[in-house]
Length: 52
Image (tube, helix red, strand yellow):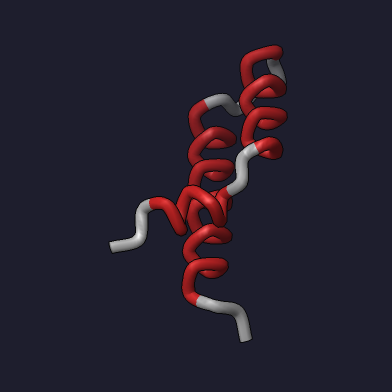
């Protein structure tokens, strides 16, 4: 069983990737750059830094 922070990090990553793909449907340099940047993000660290 995953901890809630990991679940939230997975949700955030998936949500933002979905939004990116929805906003930029055609292949282009900007989409590629953003997808690469998203892969560099430590999503769990973002969640942990913003827990109440």
